Structures are given as C-alpha cells and as structure tokens.
Length: 189
Length: 293
Image (tube, rainbow over all chains, first blue to last red; front, side, top):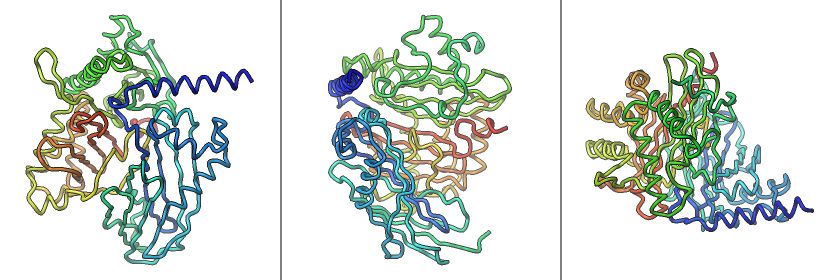
C-alpha cells in the first residue's frame, strides 16, 4: 500500500517537474506524436517496423489510450489492444490489393518513461501477400493513427537481398501516406 | 593522460550500455558516467583533455561551442537543467592501445560516441545539435553548426535544374529518421547520386560530410575521408524544404559507410536556430567491426 502511494507520489512529482519546465525552449518535440515507419520488403515477407515517440505534452493522452486500467503499467493485454488500435488505422496495399496485418513484435516502455519524451514504443506488423511475383510492384501505406497530434515518417528499409530493388518512393507532404515502387528479381544472384 | 583519468569511471563494455545515449536534456534522460559539474577543476580539465586528444581541433571546438550554446540556453531560460555542468563523460571497456574501448560524452544536444581500437577510431553514431544555433560571446558570433549549414547551401546552389529535381524531395522531413535509438536501421537512399554530380560537386559533398567525420582526430578522419571518396559515386545527397540560403531545410548524405542527417526543429520558435544532426556508419557504428575481432 505504502509502496503504491509512494510510486503514485513519484509519478505526480515527475509530472509536476515536467509541467514546470519551459516547453518552448525544449530541444525535442513535446506536443507531437512521432510515428516513424520503416517498411522492410523481403521476397517472402513485408514488415512495418513502427517506432512511436510521444512528446511530453501529449504523453498523458497517449498513456490514457494505452494504460486502460490506469494502474501505471502497460500489461501484455493493454499492449496488444493498443497494437490492434494502431493496426486498424493502417492500410497497406500491394498492387492495389489490401493486406491483413499481423502483429509480429512489440515493445512498450513503462508509462513513466513515455512521460519523459524519450520513451519509444516499437511495434512490428507483417503484411501477408504470399510469395512475390517476379517484376515490378507498388506498395502503398496509409497511416491514420491519431492524426491531430502526429508527425509521420515513412521510409523503405534498404533491402537485405539483391533480389529486391527499390525503384521509387513517394509520400504525401506530411508523410501520412507513402508509396514504394520496387522490382522483384527472383533469379538475381 | 588517458591512463590518469581511466579510474574515474570504468564501465563494462556491454552492447546495451554503449547504445544507451540520447540528445535529450539530462533531466529527462539520465546519463551514465561522470557529471562535469561534479568534477573538481583539475578533473574537469583532465576530462576535456581526453576529448581534445581524441578529437580534431575543429571537432573539439565544435563540441565546446555546442556545450556553450547550452550555457546560453540555461542563462536565457533561467533553468539550471541547461548548462555546461550538465554534460557527462564515461568510459566503456578498458582503455587500451590495442583493444577497442569507448568514450561517451554528452548531454543536451550532444551524444558523442568515440570508439578507439589501436590506430583506428570512429565517432559514429553521434548526435550534434544546437539551440541556439547562433549566439554571441564577448561580441563574437558563434555558430556551432555554421560550417555544415553554409556548405550544404553552397552544394545545393551549385546544382543545376535537372540535378535539383533529383536532389529535392517533395515532402516534409520533420525530424531525423535515424536519430538516437535507431541503431541497426538502414533506409533506402534518395535524392541525387554522387555519380550524377560533377567532380567539383563531389568534392563539396565530401567536404560537407567531413564536418561530421572530421570531428575525430585528423589521422582517423583522413582514413574515413579516403573510404568515403572511394564510395563517392554511390553516395547520395537529398534535400527537403526551402532552398533560400539560410532557411530551415533538412538534408541527408547517405553512402555505403556514412549516413548524415541535418534536421531543423520547429520547437523554440525559429527552426534555423534549433538544429539536430546525426552521423552514422551503417558498417561500423560503435566500432562494431573491431569488437568482433
């Protein structure tokens, strides 16, 4: 009981410290939710590796969405529920065909770390399209997750295999939508 | 001289620890090692002497100017969380003339990761930044990242229309893609390829990249420059944002053994006065090659 109260006091003290800091002079984003997506294209798999960093000013809103029971910890169930929420806001298409996303990995730092503005939530989804056909392809990604507070980055990862060649990347001005053109050369050594 | 300060803070060389660094203020991201503000004057001088020994004169000057910008920020904001006392130095591994070991020095806007291995060394990955990116001390204007900024605009202005069309990205880059915490990630290069630049422009690109790789001691920096020169045809330059000289624009240099990003930040008002940059070597961050020997 005492430990729980102490922990609560510590959280409040941290919050007070953070709120008393002059946000205008901070050298990091504080009012934005940075969602940086790396799109990994491999012959038998396409993965979205999403690094999410809430700024201090939006961290409480984000934590409220994730830590549903408000116990100051992110349980496996809460992490899965948030990943599901994020998944619903993502649309991935390969050559116009929409794909189902499957959560393959996630790592949630504790809420106290998110409140510092340095905590990163990492979520990875796999898009199942089946084996790639030889030739050119177009992958599109749309991220509609928490648009009012978010800043987006979308980048193709440099392919690990010579059989995948990224030929072009296009993004909307704010990078909430991106398109990656690539060619699959199955017989390239 | 290194031996005399080695006992100050010796930290085991674990991968987890060497990756534990940030550009955030120390009040938000606790650093490992010794706080400069807690050191006696002789020890503080010894710590700075270590940096001066492993860095080039202009690299050392740049680091001091970044730290001094923080002092200016501290005074202008009235907050003690900013200032030259809030930088930390730590040593990872056993200082050695043959085996790899590391020096980390950092605080707000600075994350310097120096790996030394005998005659070799690297400063990748490192974050340099400044807020304010321009200030005055005793009537002298100081721009810690001024050369980077000026050289980038000079390179951009040297491009012809067709080259600009390739180099300039038509979307916003609001932040670093491969900043602190993005270890091991490599992105597909974009912009204009070195092979599409003239000889003079290639030299300008190398000279610009040298602002980061040249933070290290000259002997190490020269070896790195040779390596980048060999790869120049495969090195890309990308630009996002306005092109008027002195405006707030993002740029990226990416080659087989180098990734550099420069990203003005909106926070604090004028983004030209608040800069974040990162330098990485996708083949040798933290001297990965040498630890594997």
